[in-house]
Length: 524
Image: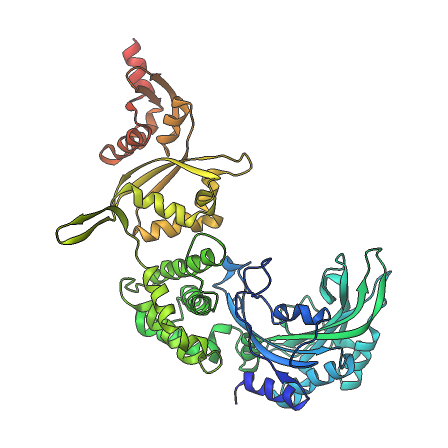
């Protein structure tokens, strides 16, 4: 029996009803893009609504978190994960919750008591310390040295500044190192990893700043499946656990490379394709786009493609579908929508793979004729529109593009909002947006420059990366004389004249470039 089943079976034995996992896209909460925790779909019931399944609930919830997407690639971060949760809606409280958490971990998952430590709320000027939870842990065999009292940033839910139901929480930590377990718990020691969180909603924070006890108290708990699996299997790299083993093996088969030595690329591909599978199979019908959930889906797929290329996977093959099929087969027992919407998933992955620019659509005696291109400058423009929300929304405008397909493009942009940097928007966080476009164009170099209504300023920017000393323009002839330092001349002209040629196309000006010494010689 796997951990998921053990968890549900245990809490069902304690009178809980298993509820189905909610979709990854919230059904009635437009404030967030995805469900990021097991409790999120249950907020209305934690706030007082009656749940149709009763007052004791448990589940495994599929979650998507994208706030640290760029961190995925290390041993612990995931975009998609499953949260194991159990809840009391005005039913049992601290004693039962803590006792059952301890029982499951030590008696059913066989974690040694000496490898566990806990944190509890230390109290403040308004709310007293949670000594009740601390005493319960002691009664179960957790020594005083393994209990840490921490402040509201660590052991209070939600933010103490927010009004409404709230309360302290207690968190359970596991010693994951092979070194001897310290006699005293130090929460700052990274070898202590959090595996469980019990939130006790026992107060109402009133608008006047006071906290009054709730008549109906709730318990909200959560344990990440990926983390607890790694803990139980004794691995510090989550991707070495059984949860990821099948996907990692499939990537090894496709790439012909080993996970070891290519860990970052493998982790990103495995995580991002898995997240893409669950997003695209969701009842909400999410498709890749340049906004909201669709933008996240597009970014996940393209980032996976980028790293697939790094390990020499043939990105024109059906590699994404092979990995996706493996993931669906592993998870369909628990999430039936994966089987139901498998064709949708495969279509999303396939359609996001290659982009073509439609040049012309016309009727012919033989029917409709569609002319497409991968070399047209319009493709670059369209890719930026798809990748950069600010362009799609009209905040950033593409003023002109010049392109020599397969080699280099120059794009001039301007912002209609003084608070938005047009070049920064196009580049994206850590260069992610422009890199996605470069990947789509198979390594074509892209220069992003700031457009200006001042011709001299625009021309100087267009010749980037060269540094320009002066620009003299002739409005009548639409020609310009440009002076650069002697050591910048070859850069300004570019290999075989490419840089100045693209700059001339971009600005629609004739450009005559001379070095400083050449200009001085002519003057003399």
